[in-house]
Every structure is written in structure tokens, then in C-alpha cells.
Length: 107
Image 1: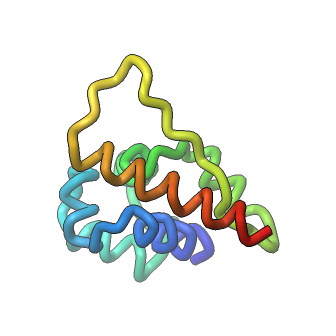
Image 2 (image 1 turned 90 degrees about the vertical axis):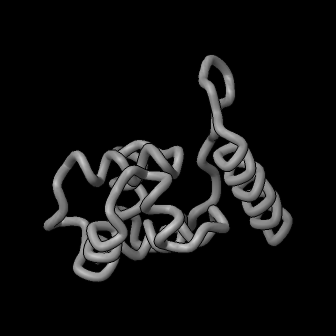
Image 3 (image 1 turned 30 degrees about the vertical axis):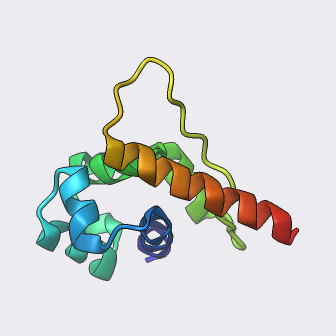
């Protein structure tokens, strides 16, 4: 369930609700809701990858966060170079950057 909790937090930080995020990730809302409620373990690898990709993280980064006892979502780089981003995606990146800066300022 730790992976699902981490995903919930990261999705919240995008500023999108679960339904809008599911659409962005290319998943049915019910699939994403199931992943977040029942855990990532029962989800298909393809769906986990889609969610991670929409968050701008790798599956390896999700695993690293989940394997840490006191995980703290601090920095996940969003690279703009070489990729076409929609306005909505750029907005989500900017919101996440603001979140990361605010976390940095708390320390």
C-alpha cells in the first residue's frame, strides 16, 4: 500500500483531481482509483508505467521511495528538452516545481 500512498501524494501535487489525472495518464478513472485504493501490486505493469510517466518519475524512483522507511517526496526532475509538452503538462510541471521549492524552504 505504500506505493499507492506515494502515488496519491504525487497526484495531489499535480493539482489535478484523480479523474483528470487518469485521463492525462491514458487510463480509465476506475483503473486508477482501483490502483490507489487496493494497491499497486495488483495493477498491470503497463498501467503502473503509465501513471509513473504521467507523474514524470520512473518506476525505479517509485520503488526507491517505497523502500525508504521515512520517505519524503522532495525532488523529481522534470526535463523539458527534446519533448513536446501540452499546456496542461507544462502547468502541472510548474505546480510541481513550486511544491518542490516550498519543501526546500521548509528545511
